[in-house]
Every structure is written in structure tokens, then in C-alpha cells.
Image 1 (cartoon, rainbow, N blue to C red):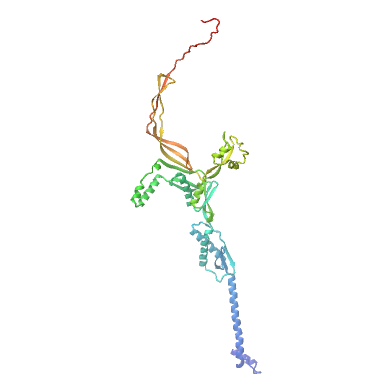
Image 2 (tube, rainbow, N blue to C red; image 1 turned 180 degrees about the vertical axis):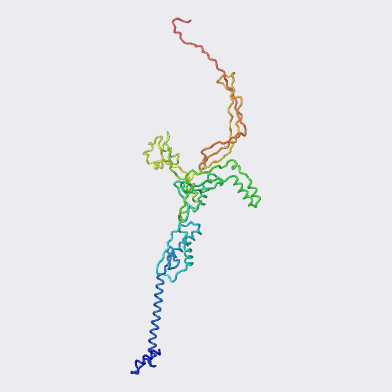
Length: 421
């Protein structure tokens, strides 16, 4: 300031008017420097505004399916954190989720960038909220043309076990899902729990019990169980199980699936017409009306046009899954000994005489009986043991030939001209 006043003093010596004179210097200086200060402040504010605008223009607003999770300047980092968050949430849910969520980033919004930790945490929280809306790893149970989707392999096995139990009347069956070598699909393998394994389970269970009454009851035998034993359980239809990703609303629970599978529905089957068959008779035997029969047999022109050997379609009510059960059954049955015949020459051939009445004996028969949906269709006897011996009927049969002779003719008319001889 002093240097500037000295300069003005040298320049304006002649006029003897210095701008730094006491009366002029103060107001001019204050006005001039006030403008400089105001301009400086304005410049600083402008720089700050421009800097903020530039900073914000580089920020990205991050959304997962329209839900804001944070802000960043690094799009690559946001994408990396998004994939990591999906992996973390999926692993927490046993890798059963197929994500169908979108990550979007919009420019020019937000005040500050979120930290990596903030972004990761926010993403995981949003994904956790959205997981129930995503397709989940589930399993489809296919029984020929029928399909039902269940939540897990465990549910599939439970459905099959409960279905077979309806007909086998036993819970001693375990279903395993094994991979088919040709199709790579999962197929059920039916395993019966062996007697030794069952005994081990009973021993373990009895050790766990503390009530002596329960232990006593556990030793009781069931006479029905002793007389029949399940030796094989199988399914009649082809079954496949495969993974599928669906939303929860497409899943069926176990009890509902079992109920639908065992419910009898009409299935079309081919029937070969036999001699004497009529359309009304065929329809009645299969629980159909004639109009229902004609509706599914459009090739038949009228009710009298079927011939032996023709193939027609009939609606047969049956469940979606048929269960084949083979049981080893033991039962008592009457039997009769072969009749004993004794020849007698004192009696004619056409004569016979019972000298001893027969009495039925009793056998204990062991047979393997095959059932389909609870109805027996085949039985094979494997063993017989006589409990009470039968008494054979004894019959004497004659062997003597009856004599033959010509009976004299009585009456008649003599026609010979030679007369009687």
C-alpha cells in the first residue's frame, strides 16, 4: 500500500493531488477491496459448485430391480459386488435360487459414493428380500404323461413312499433316487428294510425308551404280520425325476401330490371286441354310458357296427401311479386225498361200492401273491405242509363182465309157405 501511494505521489507531484491523501484513500480503498473480496468469494463458490457438479456427474445411482442400494463412481466395482452378493445369498439358501434380478446404474444422482462394505451389505439385504420371488431349484416327478413339481428330492421320495404305503400297508420301504445311465435322469429305486436292520432299529428304540410298559408292548407280535410278508414293491409305470427352477407358487406340497396321484381318473385303454359283445355291454362293464363310449370312439358310425376283433377305446378309472406288491402269505387250506379204488371180481364192471368215506385234511400253504393297487392278480405256491392228514375215500369197483344172451321172440306172424319146422 505504501509502495502504491509512493508511486502515485511521484506521478502527481505537480498537481499536488495524491489519491493516497488521507481524505480520499480510505473510502476508495474500502470500496475497491470490497469488490475484490466479493469477487473472490463468488469465484470460490463458482469453483465449488462446478466441482460438486462434476463430482456428482461421475456418480452412479445403483438399483436392484428398482430398489436403490447405493452410489458409486466405479461401475465395474458395482457389478463385481452384485455378483458376489448373489453368490453369498444363494449359498446361504443351499444354492437353490436362479436369479432373475437386474442391476441398473443411472448417472448424475447421489451426494456421495457408498463404500464397498455399504454396497455389499445393501445388495445382500435387497436380494434376501427378493429371493422368494425368484425361481427355486425344485424337482419334477414325471409319471408317464403326468407331472407334479415338488420342492426337494426329499419331498419326491416322501410322495413315492406314501403312495406305495397305501397299497403295501407297510412303512418298511425306502425310496432312493439313482441316476439312469442312459437318460441321466433320476429314477426311483425301491428298497425293503431288511429284518436285521429293522431289529437293530427296534433295539435302538427300546434302549431310548424309559417307560417299562412301552418296552413290554414292543415285544408283542402281530398275527397278521406273521402270516404275510412283503417281499417286493415296485411301480407299474415309468418314473423320472429331474431338476427344474420354478417359483414357489408352482410347487405342490407332499400330501396334495399323494392325494392327486392315488385318485382314480379315467384313462383311455384299448379293448378288443369279442363274440357276443355289444356297445352297451362294453360301456356298462367299464362304467360308461353309451354316449360317453361313442364320444371317444368317433370311428364307430352306429351302435350296431362293431365286429369281433375290432379295437375300441374304453375309459378305465385308475390312479396315476400303480403299485405292484408281492407278498409271501401263509394260510391254511383244506385238501382231499385221491380216492382209492379196489377192484373186485365179484361185482360187475358197472357196479361200485363206497366202503370208506373220505375226510378232508388241512395244509399250511405258503404262496407268493402279486397285487396291483390292492387287487390280487397272480398267486404262486412255493411250499405246502400237511397239518392234518386227509383220509382217502375207498371205493370197490367191479371187474366182472355181465353175460350176454338173446331174448326169445314172443308173438309175431309166420310168413313162410313151408310152415313150422
